[in-house]
Length: 448
View 1 (cartoon, rainbow, N blue to C red):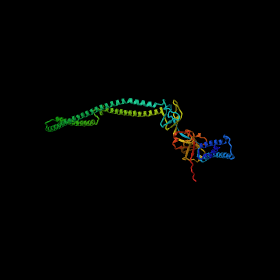
View 2 (cartoon, rainbow, N blue to C red):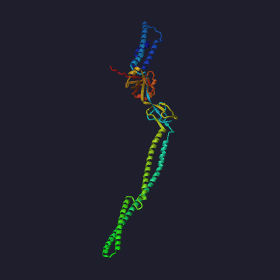
View 3 (cartoon, helix red, strand yellow):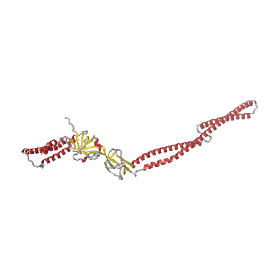
View 4 (cartoon, helix red, strand yellow):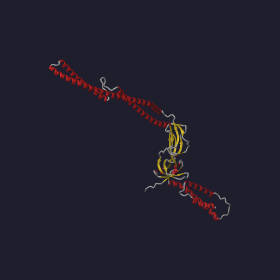
C-alpha cells in the first residue's frame, strides 16, 4: 500500500512538460501505463487486519491515482498536436546532398585507376577510372609526320645546292670583275694609242700645211710645177682627215671606257654584257631561289612540328582519358565496371558532394505559404543527434524537385510542398546523407 501511494504521489510530478521531445513523451506514456496496470493488480501481501479508516482511505487513493495518470496521459497526447499547431515544422525531412555525375569524354574501354568501393571517401582531384581507346583516329598525325620527314630529307639537298650555287656565283663574279678590269685597261690603252695617232696626224698636218705654203710661194716665181703643188695640197687634206678620224676613234673609245666602267661592254660586233657577267647574274638569281626554297622548307618544318605537337595532344585526349572527381566526397553509385566498353558522354559514376549538403523537407500548404527565402530553420534528427541550423534557400512548392540530389525529394510524398534548407553547421559536411528528422522554422513576426 505504501508503494502504491508513493507512486501515486510521484506520478503527477513526473508528467511531461510542454518542452519535452517526442521520445520523452513516448517513454512517459509507457511508464504511466505500467504504473496504471500495477495499480489495477490485486495485492499479494498476506492478509492483515485493517481498520475501518484505512478501508475507506484506499478507494480514494486509488481513484486519485487514476485521475492523475489520466491527466498526465491527456497532457502528453495533447501537447503533441498543440506543439504541431504552435510550431512551423515540416511533415518529414531528410539530410540530402547534391550528386556530381562523371561522364566519359571519349569512347573506349574502362580501366580501373585504383580500387574504388561504394561509399569510399574521395579527395578532390582523385583519378578514379581511366578510359582507353586503342582505335582512335591517327590519320592526320601520321600524315603530318610523313610530310615533316619528307621536308627534313629534302632540306640537306637544298642546302647543298645553295652552297654550290653560292660558290659558282662567287667564281663568276670574280671572273666578271677580272673581265671588266681587263676591258677597262684595254680601252684605256686604246685611248692612249689613239691620242698618239692624233698627235702624229697633227704633226703631219702641220708639216703638209707648211709644205703647201712654200710650194705656193715657189709656184708664183715659177720654181715649182703645178703638179707638185697639187700633190702637196692633197697630202695636207689627207693629213687633216687622218687627224679628224683619229679624234673620232678617241671619242668612241672614251664611250666604250665609260660603259665598261659601268658594267656594259660595247664593241664593233656586239653591244651587250659578256657571258661571265650574264652567268653570274643567272647564278645570283638561282641562289635567291634556293634561299627562298630553303627558308620555305624551314618554315614548313617548324609549322609541321607545331601541328604535330597539337595533334599528339588531341590524339592523346582521344586515346586515353582520366576520370577525376572534381569535389571531395563519396562514391554514391558506380554505373560501370572495368573492361566495359562505353560511348562518349556515357555516365560512369556518381559522386556525393559532401561540401554541398542540403536538407530537403515536405511541409503543409499552411506552413509553405508562411515561409520566405532566407528564413532561419533547424533540422532535428530522429536519432537524437545534435540539431543542425540553416537557412531556407529554395521553395519548390508543387513544382518538380531538383534531379541532382542523392535522395529524390519526390520520395517524401506526404505533402507536395517542398523546402530546401542550406545548413550552416560543419556537422552537415560529414556526408550523413539519409538521416531523417524534421525541420523547425523560426516564426516571423508580422507587422501590425
